[in-house]
Amino acid sequence: MDSAHTPAYEDVRTAPRASRALATEAVHAGRDDLARQGLHAPPIDLSTTYPCHDSRAEAARIDAFAADGAALDDAPIYGRLGNPTVARFETALARLEGTEAAVAFASGMAALSAVLLARATEGLRHVVAVRPLYGCSDHLLTSGLLGTEVTWTDPAGVADALRPDTGLVMVETPANPTLAEVDLRAVAHACGSVPLLVDNTFATPVLQRPAGQGARLVLHSATKYLGGHGDVMAGVVACDEELAGRLRRIRFATGGVLHPLAGYLLLRGLSTLPVRVRAASATAAELAARLADDPRVARVHYPSIGGAMVSFEVHGDPHAVIGGVELITPAVSLGSVDTLIQHPASISHRIVDEDDRRGAGVGDRLLRMSVGLEDVEDLWADLDRALGKRPGAPRVKGLHEAKG
Image 1 (cartoon, rainbow, N blue to C red):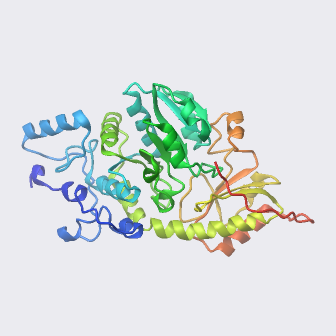
Image 2: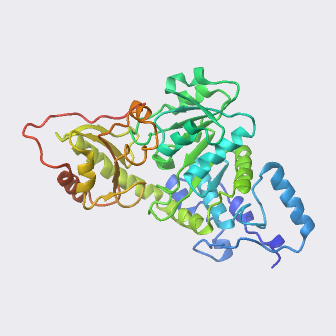
């Protein structure tokens, strides 16, 4: 069949937007057209190029894409412009975040880089950001590798930090790794006409939808909860169609495309996202409460919106805890079905200047734990053993809820 007549994108992009619960959307978004095609599981399109005998029409479509980065609405052209399998994931994520569009990339850092480049092409190279952010995000902004300049501030100082050349305000809430929270509506109001980008990796659309609180761009390291099984690397930005067009053009020019197999795995991961997040969150809340009452723990950080992430500061050697776990996996990353623990000052935030890191609350005794789907008693037994001998006189503490 000539690709000019192949509805590879049409049914995916124009699927009905009925008002449905998040759990229902997670299962069906991006798949609405399958039954009409006699399919149950989404197909994986691994093609890098697509034949077309009408080269004049092909040229017109390429010109149209170059002009505004509009999503392909019929036949594919080339893998760097778009892929039908990846488009399914983008459609689904946009539905879950409540935005007009989403643009997927090869990693979360590729996604953030595309946003910065898109703003820089408009002559808007200045970024206002609130610490803490993921360590590599912090480094990308601070280093100026993409020609950007950053002003770091607290949430209350956003409005005063804006300049005529400010192209973006960036926050992460709950923040990595302290789980500090930001009042998104207040920050969005302070931004005025400057787009607010929210890294929603920790919360996922299950716990918060930043676009409904004033954010214009929502960033995910899709490697984490969206994939959910530690076997796919990806990033995605949910936003309005105007910004999505700019991001698609950047993606085409820089080549930071998502592989179709990764798109397939992410779409599959979304179907269980609400169940996974809610189950892991219940376990995380219980572990946070137990850690807060443990005399070997100095402080516990757990966000008011809940979630599967817990950070805690120990009185003893945090490296001994990392070395002492057996069931819990001592590894970077997060959001998998199994529980992971790491020492941010040594790994995820090592690249951040030491004074900046500590100033953002990332101390040397802080541990970050991504709670998975194991039984809570098994996880507690492992933590209890790794934390070492209890002191003779227990010290009673309340649970600290991290707030920005």
